[in-house]
Amino acid sequence: MTMSEAARELIDGANTAVLATIDPDGTPQTSVVWVGRDGDDVLISTTAGLRKVANLQENPQASLLILDAADSSHYVEIRGTATITDDPDRQLAVQISEKYQGPGAGAEYLALPPEVVRVAIRITPTKVRVRT
Image (cartoon, rainbow, N blue to C red; front, side, top):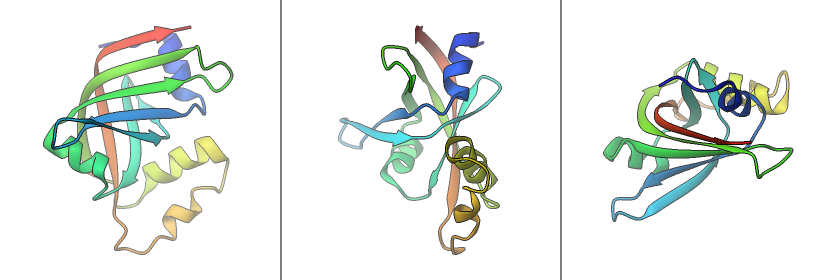
């Protein structure tokens, strides 16, 4: 699926997102996340073992709502399939952190002890809805 320029702009901005996954009991679970983009896929960096990761490993269907920081009535909703991979060098965590907090902000992720495992969630869209 190819995203519109309006959707890409919302993803590329320092806009807060809400990730929805499905808990094992079938109920929704939401998490506030920061996002990046690789082509038309959306990227999220997180810590391995968290509920959102476990949920996506069990059921890869996800919904992501990204709100325009300047006007929350503007948003993009992305529904799709998630894949999870390791981020052993934590470069995705650094990249996304610096997008939101500025240069150098990602150093905190590089300083984490090795037992703190970072993963990358890649959401490949099947449906994109933009409201601007």
